[in-house]
Image 1: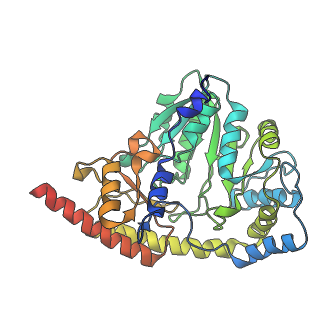
Image 2 (image 1 turned 60 degrees about the vertical axis):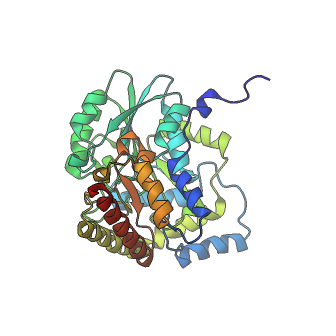
Image 3 (image 1 turned 135 degrees about the horizontal axis):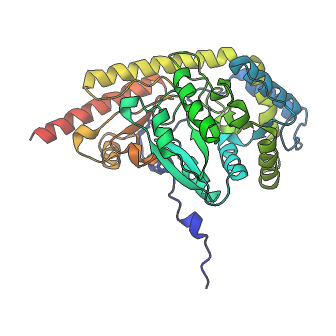
Length: 391
């Protein structure tokens, strides 16, 4: 029989995040710090709106691009947060999570052989989505000494005459790194100089702890060359509702909409009605969750200092990225032993790119009680490894 499978698909590596999630799901009494899913329930007033939409029989398809009311609220949100307005009719597309927006956004703009610049460590979907779009991923390795921020020099050195688009993954998963205005202004200068596009994934924009999140669309000349990706999963604890959106130039959103029409039809109707309520009345909920995450973040940083584990201080998302190079083990070896011996699951840094070697991603989207229990086990494990190396 002929080969039944696509060589391009077969060549893709499975998600390193899901691998450890699947393992821990089959272990009794294991603690998982591996999945980036808020431990909060979706706020009641948002759930109520979803329930109400079902009670009213709103189970029909919406417009392919999304509910008019939701697109209007998204435009109002970007104006309120970034001072940038998008035309709800032509420049906003509601998607099935931010992940769909990343996929169709890349497919809408790249041609075979175009290069997509991807700073790593970063979210696992960028590279495979670029490959499936027929593009060539070009990895820019972010450095701990730069707080895992992308520098203008690193960007300049990676650009060729085949470069089409830069993925800008900040606040960053897995490192928790952020970009400040000065960083973005320097990046924007390079982008304008070389006339390339940007895909700015800002799904963690509401979860910053140092200062207000700054989007690259706020920088002069960048709105018209940026696909802005955001969604509801992280800020509003709506992971299972599967809802995101993209904003950008009309000519790009129009092509993304075609792909969305053929593959998806429209995002879930119930989720869209709930999202309208989230944007209109969810600011206090977000602030409350952000305060809790910040408390957990500060606890982890203190705990790492106490156990002498190197970790730069993250100011975004809900992840820390401690360095475990001192133990002479690969990230995967460390994570596997930690899971087997202490029954705590973390994600090897290599799940987010080869340059994640020597690091672990630990999510603090978990209760403080669970974090304290898990970090106590980590301290015990670290002490044991240090004694082993001394013997």
